[in-house]
Amino acid sequence: MNQKNPVIKVTNLTAGYDTGPVIWGVSFEIPEGVVAGIVGPNGAGKSTLLKVMVGILKPHSGTVLFWNKEYSEVYKRIAYVPQKEEVDWTFPATVYDVVMMGRWVHKGLWKRITKQDKEIVRQALETVEMWDYRNRQISKLSGGQQQRVFFARALAQDPDLFLLDEPFAGVDMKTEETLLELLKQQASKGKTVVVVHHNLFTAAEHFQWLVLLNMHVVSVGPPEEVLTSENIERAYGGHLPVLAKLSQRLSSLREKPTR
Figure (cartoon, rainbow, N blue to C red):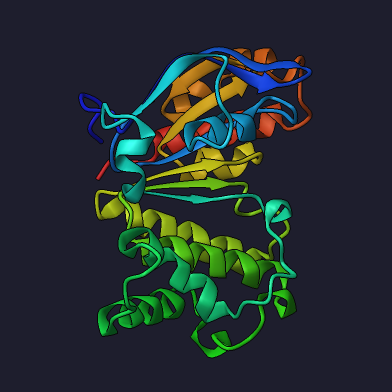
């Protein structure tokens, strides 16, 4: 984990919609080579934050830098996977077509698809166990299969940074476990993964870095430092029924021997 040279640096970020700001004065850094989670209650501004980071939403104030550069300078190195609800699943495209879109960012609209591109797409689909579905319309897939396909598109882009908005929402347990393992594999290769997520148990067990958000940043750092009783109460506005169980889980993680 390289904390000296952060992949993402957000400074004094305020953003929202016509009704007003959703996040205020948000500042944090995310180091290289981790699976990081942006966690917090519903309405905390997690998805809004991600949209500002990739330029979908313009901030009221503040800055977001990737490798100390603006998004427009490094967007080819960043793969963004939106929430399922924001995708038009009726669009007439096959699984193969969707994953090939991951190659477009490197080629532009008018360059030919090469054998190398086709091989990258094949490998991405095989990685998420969706190669046999390559000719199926995306509208005919289950929710878990659709998420696998969109992660395959991100893999085909071959980015250095993955930004995923609620990738486990509405998926089956097997798909969640598969995606978690794939995310860890990417981090082990030195890539950085940022996941908007709501399940604190998953975050505690599988993520190495957390941003706990509720309109403001409550805490940033490793899970055992972020998910304290005090921080959770500040973020969620009181005692949670799961707080005691979460504390036990974190205690067991702290007691695991380091390798």
